[in-house]
Length: 77
Image (cartoon, rainbow, N blue to C red; front, side):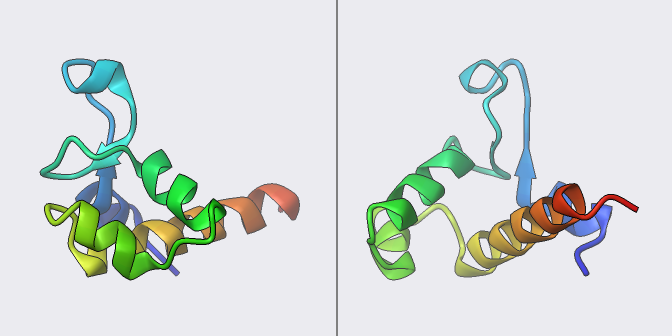
């Protein structure tokens, strides 16, 4: 399970960066861009090739975090 420390190292939102759009930490690459690539059927490696400032570990951790959030939302405690 991804903890909040991990989440804070992966994605953040700052009003001074792209108007607060959630981006990968240390980049100006929106998390939504990764989802758009995957939705279009593009492999993770293609996204990483196009956005070299995003580390593979960041992308995977972000996807794991999104998965956990969706599961928690679908199955409220």
